Amino acid sequence: MDELIRVDNLCKSFGAVPALRGVSFNVSSSELTVIIGPSGCGKSTLLRCLNGLELFDSGYVQMGDITLDRHNEAPPRDLNAKLRRLREEVGIVFQGFNLFPHLTVLENVVKAPMIVKGLSREVAAQQANELLRKVGLDDRAHYYPSQLSGGQQQRAAIARALAMSPRVMLYDEPTSALDPSLVNEVLQIMRNLDGEGMTQVIVTHEMRFARDVADKLIFMHGGELRLSARPVSLFTSPRDEGTREFLHNSLGCDE
Image (cartoon, rainbow, N blue to C red; front, top):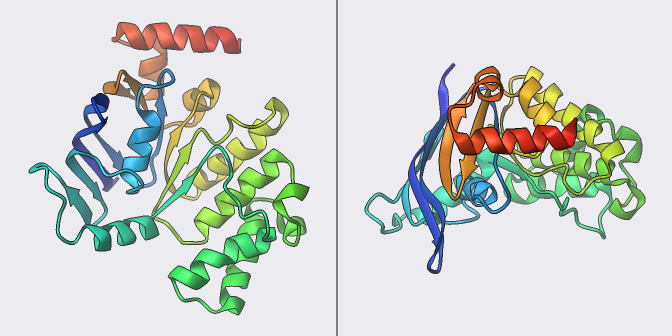
């Protein structure tokens, strides 16, 4: 598979507190990569650096033909232009849905393509309706977010991100705010997108999903990437003691 994402020696601090310590990894096109690790280990910060919501201090991120290179520390002169291009290529879904409460589901999905891509309302609405069918919300197009369950709101958020036709989808704990009974309906959307060849990077504590669906698992601890491996290798014989302890505790709570 072609390499779509390359991250090299990524460092990020908040004041004197380091969040990322020299993180490096690659993601191939159509690959589903799951990032796991204890709370506060830098997973969410890493995800936000991948789409430019956080500007890293040093290192290198390449997303397709877009490169953010800060090996020399200074921001590139064309930084803002690169960030705009990057955000058009990368969709991101948060744990808190972040839907506009005063807009219907359909209006939430059509807004960005009309403003950013200049699509007509007719074309944007046609695309939005197709995406809502994909995520099983075609009968909720004219509902407001407050009229939806948490799982439905998250599926609407996924449809909204897909409306920009991204090359990569990022998810930051997309099921952590959901009741357990609603988790699988969101995970199933990601499974379906994986079957269609969408490149996805997912931060999650859903260990069974990570074990059963991921092409690659990344374990982070203390801002460092401790291990990157295929699920069968990481779950059956992790070489890193921190990984073994984390998986034992996580799966032990799951079982």
